Image 1: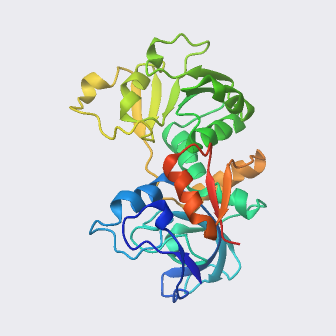
Image 2: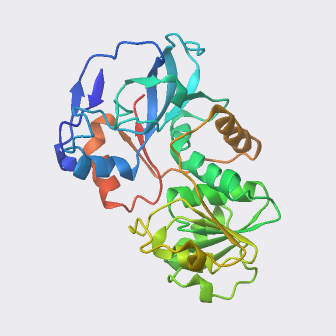
Length: 320
């Protein structure tokens, strides 16, 4: 079968398609015929910086998510031909991931889905929409009566969050760095857009948000905590600001009275949450967002765009 195999850290232009054996099935694992896979920035970081570290057992097939059909269910409860998604749990890092025609994956991170979405649209969902859904409903406990501010709204998770929040009737404020993005964000459901200059706490809003999805991360976290109403809720999910920790964190002084801070970690998906996500997508007729589609043979172009950014949305690898 065809696959992208990472031997060591390398440039995007050094990637190429290899022929490797189809994995042999073993107990507790299922063989998935991969139809498509969403690309993630973590895969570019793996290729550029991490692959040479001892905790990555190279050679490795990258890819932390995929969609496809069960080819061999092994000893699981799956049936051959079941439509599934798979994400996280060590995919593409602890064991071979989705950049291949057949992937051997642990059954506990493979989920059956009830959907009529085509394979490419479906591939836009797993990691991105699961992260947005968990952040909004597990962490922020979002309801139709809330006013949500999405900070980092033009990101893939930010756009998904806008769609999901609007689907339940919440009021959505989208914060981003450029006014040119306003029209797109309003088209997918944002009620109001605002420029994020790093000091939203000084902004006067038409309706002040009582909940914030923080995708920039520690760089703007304190400002977000000072922006919400009292009581208010902030979920820290992303690190788009490239600042990964809060220095000298003192929770008593850092978190304002009456404000609640939480965070979402996407490494532990469950079938029940996946079912809820796809139920909302189906009932609200949400169209998953993606920007570019590449074949396995176009992996150099795909990873170059992934590394540089600017795709404007999710990049999909088509393996059909």
